[in-house]
Length: 640
Image (cartoon, rainbow, N blue to C red; front, side, top):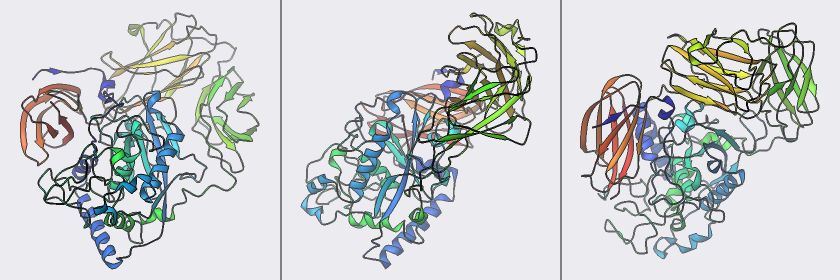
């Protein structure tokens, strides 16, 4: 097979997304994610079986169930690469509204349930709210956002970690974490069953599927909020109604009142729609694969399973005591963001930040970066002028908004005062080209000057095996400057391009050791008489941050991406390898039979292989890449 090895590490985390306006088939990635988690944790299956045993025992001992309503706080982690993916708070609320209708059996379309199943449809005890209290006790909208450089995510949970382009979970014992973003391979969503890792517990959705019957998203015909109803069902312990056995009629979802059926149903079937000798499939059940407009019920057995998770001893019982839906008395401030500095001299600087809604004042702490004690002052506006500072000294500062209840302190920002005598001297010129880049010391700050409209500053530094991870900050900007990071081989790795005088930050968590280069340049072509501050940090552990505007890349993860997906014959296989090694590419059908195998080699970093599967029949397949120790898998569909 022909192989192309891409040199840009950025491509290892930037995948092509699937067209979102019209999706031909519902694809749920829950079972694929479950298999990945089982590979990572051999004890998971045993924990899940213990949960199932408790659930069965509880239902048997309480045939009438538990009528206590459980209100579940929900936080949306909106991870977006484009403006369209940055769904609104209102759209998140519409999704909450649809979940409440569906789980309470208040959805009007439930009236269309065929008579044979009408007596089986049931409300659950689960209700949902957008969280109003954060894990720290502060007021929240229940929605947080991150602008990511990652163009799409798969079912490998990268969207659930800040270090891999996504966002970290809130406490999964107190909140239902919902991640929205651009998903590859036509996947509409996936969930984690009870018993999985706390750090990844929750559900993931294609951004365009979020909405409700009254306020649809754009992923027609899966845009009425029922993808969330389906995936939250998995989170609440429910399996696919056909038992994920292909068409064998031997699988089971473990629910006594759902008919055995041969396979998933798509579109909007007409009643009756029999299989496996039943009168009809319960195709209108939320745990089938029908269109959003054609699924509208849970059965009583399914409701009993979900409800049992939230009773004393149940896997999600802690959720019953969560304070996430309880407003903070008096209302707490949000956290200040977009910290910046201007007017920096030898002894003064003006600090500023974005205004916080509802804030009556701001507490500001500042100190010399090497000091342990903060000086605290108050400002009535979102800016503060400092005087009496020491020349040629780096300072840290952070801001706390004050409302009826005081908010949390912001992340720390830094600036460096000018050298004595005023003005700013650039000691690194001439360094206008890559070949004249000036070496600088790690874990310290330097000042540089863009003295003309055509001036560009190049610097170099070297990381080490014991401190390979890299964090670069560009602060104290007199105008709009940007920064680029280049690999030891001279390849552009990543660019940070925030607007105006907002500080620039690049995090590059790598294991590759060598001499890297930094390019600092003016976006607007403006010259200045004030210096900027450049800081290079290296360390042994990954740098992590949720600060807005940070460009963060973690190239140390093995990743696998397939496109186009679905495909009619040819498949591009993108594989990021942690080392140069021999690999095997295997393809399995959904019954676990190996139907294709090929030996190959992988270079350290991103690799692309072109595979021709023209002889495969239509259907779903699993592609595995194994180096003999670790296997990475993902799913693809053949459609001819």
